[in-house]
Image 1 (cartoon, one colour):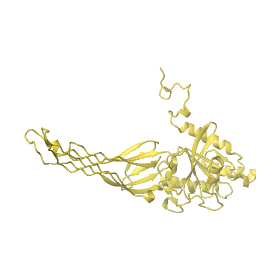
Image 2: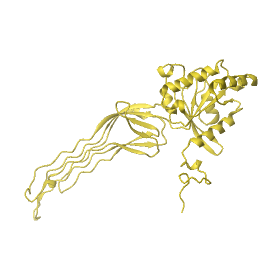
Image 3: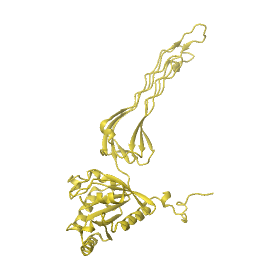
Image 4: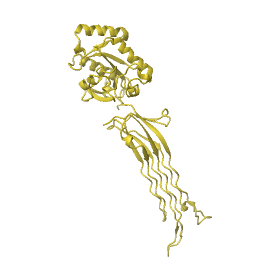
Length: 352
């Protein structure tokens, strides 16, 4: 399935049905008079977040969505049928933006969440509505009220626990394939990954989602390479795993390049907890791996890990560190992280 993370669509809610002008004229039936019914209400336009979607590709082939109009009223005091709502299903993590692409209308970040973006038009009154003691034969009825319409932008930001960042060909896709059942494209050339990939890691009785995005190069925030278009998919990640190819000459410069692009992108990416790790250590002797670690520690000021996704040497400690970090970053109300011995009244569930 082709990945699409941005789309522009047109929405229109349903018009209301027209009111009816009718009179009751039946032989041997007394008390005749106006009996025109009201029109039905137009359909709403509703967005619903569903968990089994991970792309906006459906909106590539359909950009116009119109809800049905309400039915007209009829004689015998019959109100027209209201139209059903038009439900548009989007992946969890979809942001709904106004036509200016800046005003956020809703962030659909929870499975099952619904958002009524446009209300359907009300139905018009029939002539029975205007019947009074002084106006016993009104011939007035209202047309249905028009629905609302607008253009909106849909922007998908994948929801994951760990975001992989690094230069192209740093081993991000190989890492994802080694620790999850995801099967991203892997090659020995830059920009093998052209769209984000997700995978689920199972470690120490806990599972978390890892997002792999295309590599960054110097000047990405100005549009170089694939730019920073896909950085939005790691904005929700509580932890970043920064992977650096240990076989390159300047590992410190590689770290500084990516960090500069994260800071230029903004959105708090540079402030997120970061775990730095060297990859492809199976291609170097242990002495060279240690030299690269020391060179990288000199600029990062923190611990540097090293592993090989092919031989899996050093991989388990990194996964455990990610699991521990996610456990600290997750909300206290997460049932997977609840501590039954905690004395915190806010974290512990109520019991009688």
